[in-house]
Every structure is written in structure tokens, then in C-alpha cells.
Length: 349
Ligand code: NAP
Image 1 (cartoon, protein in one colour):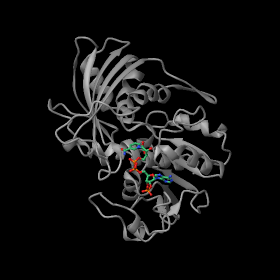
Image 2 (tube, protein in one colour; image 1 turned 30 degrees about the horizontal axis):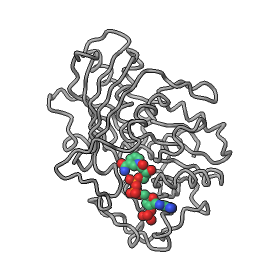
Image 3 (cartoon, rainbow, N blue to C red; image 1 turned 180 degrees about the vertical axis):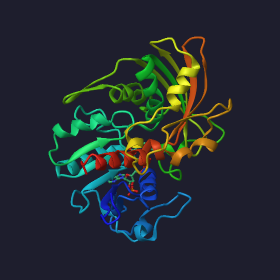
Image 4 (tube, rainbow, N blue to C red; image 1 turned 90 degrees about the vertical axis):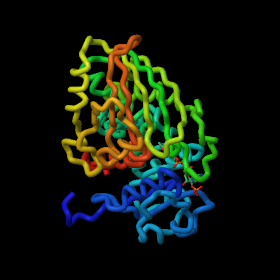
């Protein structure tokens, strides 16, 4: 986009929530998109954003955005591009209404992720799946979804392994940050001095979404991949950044050096297109035996990269390793913005 072109006005549904706030923050100085309208529940509608939001991010929201009047989530907006960070109890219906009314919806919620005609998009991994929207049921409008926050980091790490060595099976144990559970001041997780070995619905998402994302596009449908995935999920007392201990069986016999080589050299379409929020390198491998750690690596490459470390031979699987990615940046708002950037670069918005 050249400097004389006007920015594209966008709206945020669920603008007051945890993901909504991250959208506001990440879009504050975006070169292509400008926050124009904000929507939330009836309790927030009619108030200025600064009065409706219980802002908890360390940097303040832009003054201009604070003055915007929050609206109800109804498809009567001027902005034709809509980011959704809506509560999944309401996201399904509201997002479909917007798409039917001709809006381009980029969603973080789980509701439409597994719909047959909806891309479940990681711009580095399956940019071709955007083709699905050409035959999507919504006509001018569309829904594009961002995967689950743990899935994005995991799939970024798996994609070069699948392409180069083939994948037989994956076992993953997650340690997920508190910010993944919504607004920190309204979340009561009994998390102090604790680990909670249950996150509702999370294991099912991790065991199913990668198979769609890493599936093959065949004209108007995705043929799911069929390697096996087993997941166990835990909530831990970390503010931001999901850590995942992963074990894999590969189809080919390879050395650790070969795996590190393909991770280190992995770049894809967002990097080639130089999309504004694309990380320079989607994967950063650390040789330090004590890394990755959320406190030190969650913000790597604008918070948009996955950090990997501790690759080693495993006694049951072929290899074990540890990954870390920022759950509200790469795993939510940042990932959705990157999807919209790819859509803009492809002329869809
Ligand atoms: P959250 O903090 O609870 O925010 C939910 C938002 O939805 C708020 O803006 C809320 O508005 C709005 N809302 C609630 N009920 C509504 C209704 N009936 N009509 C219209 N708006 C309504 O949740 P969150 O953590 O940001 O998550 C949002 C979505 O993103 C969820 O589907 C979640 O699963 C997904 N997600 C979250 C993360 C993460 O790391 N947090 C990562 C990936 C995906 P009010 O303030 O007015 O109530």
C-alpha cells in the first residue's frame, strides 16, 4: 500500500475483551488498517470506549480510540472489514449475520473454525486455503478464522517437519498462560500457587484443528491430514505465552541437525510479501538448554514467532522439543491481523 492510499477502516467485535484490547493495541499504528468502529455487549454499547473498557494492557489505548462510541454487534457498520474477539457463546450467530450482510469477518472464536467452507488460516502454513472463500455460502461477505492459540505455535513448528520428513504422530502437553482465559480481573482460576490440569474443550481443538490446517485443498474442500495427535492441557501461573512440550514420530529417519536446519530456514508467503506484522522468521530455534521461557521469548519477533528449544532424541517417540508462542499476539489478535494482511495482499479486502 503506498503512502497516499487511505487506510482501510475496520471494526472490532468484542472490543472490550482480552483479545479485543490486543486488537486495539496492535492496530494503533498499523500502516494499512485503522480502527474505526468498536462493538461489544449491550452493557457496553452507548458508552465511549474509554468508559466501557476495563483496560489492563501496560500501554494505554490511543486517545482517539477512547472517544469512539461503542456500538451493539449489529451488521449496520460502515467498516466492511471486521475483526472478532467475541465470546464464543455469541460469536457463531453474530459473525454469520455480519458475513451474510457482506462484511469480511476475521474471527478468533472457535465457532466457525471447522465449517467446511471456512478457512482455518495460518498465513505461513496454508495461505492457499483462502481459496475456500470463493465458494463460501456468504457471497460478498466471508468468514476467515484464526486457529486456537496453542494450535498456532504447534502447527508452525510441525509444518517444516511434515513437508520435509512426514509426520506419523504427535504428543503434546501444554502449559497455558492466564491471559488465554479472558480478562485477568474477571478470571477466577485459583491459579496462585497452582496448576490446573483442565481447560474446557482445549484438548479436542488441539487434536482436530491441525489436521484441517495441514490438510490438502482440493478445489472447494479440504482433505484433512491423518497423522495422530494426543494433547493434554494445563493452565499455569504465567501472564502471557503458551509453552508446549512436544514429542513426534516422523516418517523418515533424520538427525537433530537436519530438523534444526529446516526450522531455521523456514520462511513462507507472509515473509516473501513482507506483510507488516509478519515475523522476519516464523521459527526461532535456541541452542540454550534452558530455553524457551515465556518471560524471555514470548515477544520474539514482535510476538509473532514461535520459539523452539530442547530438541533431543526421545526414548518412546523419535524426537522431543519445547515450543513457546505468545497466546494473545500470535495466538489471537496478531494472528488474525496477519490473516487480514494476507487477504489485503491477495486483493480479497
Ligand atoms: P473476553 O475477555 O471475555 O471478551 C469477550 C468480549 O465479547 C467482550 O468484548 C464482551 O463485551 C463481548 N460480549 C460478551 N457477550 C456479548 C454479547 N451477548 N453480545 C456482544 N458482545 C458480547 O474474552 P477473550 O479472552 O477476549 O476471548 C474472545 C474470543 O477469542 C473467545 O471466543 C476466545 O475463545 C477466543 N480466543 C481467546 C484467546 C486468548 O488468549 N484470550 C486466544 C485465542 C482465541 P462486554 O465487555 O461488553 O461484555
